Amino acid sequence: MSIKRKIGSGVASAALGLSLVGGGTWAAFNDTATVTNQFASGTLDLEVGKSGNKPINFDLSNMKPGDNVQRIFELRNAGSIAIKEVLLDTTVTSFVDGTLPSSQADYLSQFEIDFMQVDGESDKWEPREKVTKNGETLTLADLVNGSYQTKVKEEFLGAGGKINLAPLTVKDQQYRGIPVTPADKDEVFIQITFKNDLTKSADNKYVQNKYQGDKVHFSFNFEATQWDGVKVDSSNGNGAVNNGVQGSADGGTMPSPITTPVTK
Image 1 (cartoon, rainbow, N blue to C red):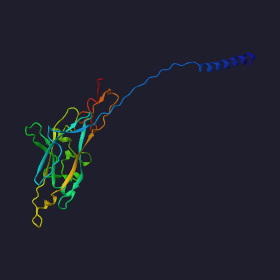
Image 2: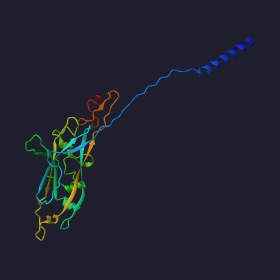
Image 3: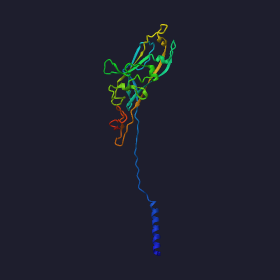
C-alpha cells in the first residue's frame, strides 16, 4: 500500500470516530401519552321492608297451641346490581325452658312455617305459590338445622341447598331474582302456626304441656347474591355495565346492551 492510501485510510477512520461521538450528543424528539382509566363498583343492597304499616317481625307472648300468626314483608333491591338469589338462614339466639323440662329442638318443632307469594292485585291480598311441596310441612326446627331440602320445591332451593325467596317476588318464573330494572315490589307472605297436638301421655295429660312457659328468640337472616360476571369486550363502549337487569348474566347469557353510556 502506498503512503497516500495509508493516510487516506487513517483520515476515514478518524472521521468515522468523530461521527459516533457527535451522534451521542445530539438531542432526540420525544412524546408521551397517558390513558386515564376508572373502575367504579356498583352496590348490591337488599332491603326488607314493611307492606304498608304492617309489622314484619314476630314478637308475641302468651301463645297457645293452635295459634296462627301471619306477616307480610317486601324484598326490595335498593342497589344498582341485580340480585340473583335471596337465601334464607335461620338462627336461634336464646332459649328459655319453662315450667317442665323440654329442649330447644323440641320446642322449635312445634311451630309449622311456610313462605308464600302474595297476590298484590287481589283486594284480599291472598297468598299463593307455597315454598313447600304438596303434603310437606316445614318447622322452625327444620329451618334452624337446615334439614328441609326434600320438603321444598326445587325452584325455591338456591346455593348450598338454602331456601331462595327471590322467586316469590315475581309472578312469572322466567324473571328470576330481584332486578333494579324493571322494579318489582311484590310481597312475601309468611305464616307460623303453633301445632295443636291432641296426643296425651299415659297420665292423661297433653304432651304439649311441657312447652308451657318456654321462650325462644330466633332470627331470619337474608343473603342477597349477584349474577355471574359480565364480559365487556373491545367492541363494547364505555359507560355503566348493565348489571341491573333481570338475569343480567347467567352462564353464557349476557345482558343487552352490555354497557350503557353515563351522562355526566
